[in-house]
Image 1 (cartoon, rainbow, N blue to C red):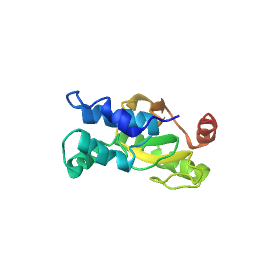
Image 2: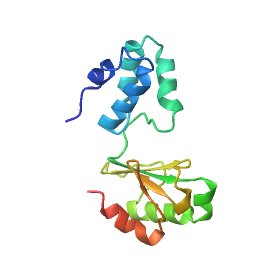
Image 3: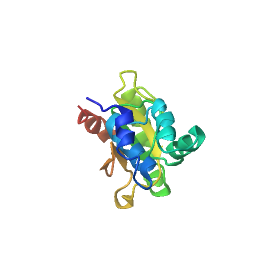
Length: 149
C-alpha cells in the first residue's frame, strides 16, 4: 500500500535539499507527484506554493499528476532519432492505442519523450520505469510490452 504523502514529505523536512529528496520519494511511492503533495511540501519546507510547484516541474524526471504504472520513455536525441526512434514511437502508439504524453485508459502505461539516457551505443533506446531497453525495433515492441505484468 502506498504511503501517505504527508508522511513521506515529513521524512525529508530537516534535510538540506529535502524537497527534492521528498519529490523523489513521492515519485517512487506513487509513480508521480500528487498535486496535493506540492502544497503540502510548500508548507513543510517553508516556501510558497509557486516555489514548490517550480521545483516539481523544473526537473524532467518529476511529473505532477497521475501517470501509468509503467512509464515508457523514448529518447528523442539525435542518435536515437537517426536510428529510427520515430518508427518505435509509432509502434508503441499503435500497440497501446495512445499518443505520446498520454496514459492508457486502464492506467497501466504512460508514453513520454526524454532526452538522452546515455545508451547511445545501442540506439534507439526506451526505458520502462527507468530500465533501459536497447536497440529497440518496431517489431520488438510487443515483446517488450508483454514483460510488463
